[in-house]
Amino acid sequence: MVCWFLKVQAFIIVIGLFDFEITIQNIVLTGSFSEAIDLCVANSKLEGSKRNWKRFPGLAYKLKVPPATFLLFRNGKFVCTGIKSQAKGQAATAVFLERLKAEGLVSSNCVFECGVKNLVASVIIGGASISLEQFTNQFESVIYEHEKFPAAVYKMGESRATFLVFLTGKLICSGVADEETLKQAVKDFYDQLIEKNAIEKVLTSL
Image (cartoon, rainbow, N blue to C red; front, side):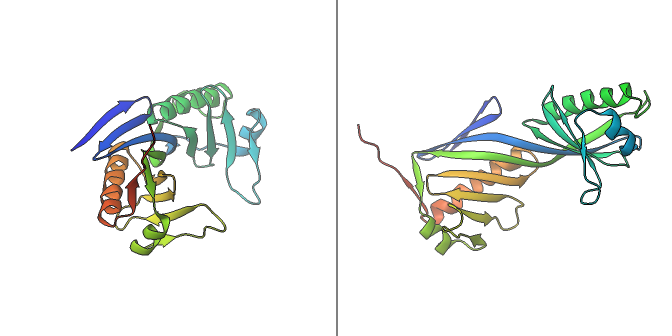
């Protein structure tokens, strides 16, 4: 039986002997404004904006309230990062659009549309330990170089989900675009760990 408990930006999953705490750490939104933007003018009017057009064709701008980072392109397309929910990303984009309007970079009729491109979440498996040796031997598509990095990298078959797997039972999941896909990816990965005997309960002393 699987139970889901929704917290603020976190989910608690109870599967068998383990409690899984999933916390959304970052969401990447992609979208577009309905008008093109002159980035040279934008760079001069948006305080703190940064550009290096020899290396990157966009303009970087950090919004302080609400906190979010935007990559803005001439055709009006943008990427928004540093947020932890789609609602916060949309709110930040609305604030950014008002700033663009106030600076005369777009008209008062300009609107935007956006959607989640990628979601990054941390997963803590309470009271569990993952045998990375067993994990790397039993799973395909695993990269593990413990001399360089303390986690194994695993890409799930048909799923777009990618996991960083730590000995302590902590996981980092990326490559999914919504919370339901995230929860299903974690459950599917757990089932694989159980099937291949790569996870075990850590006994704690009283």
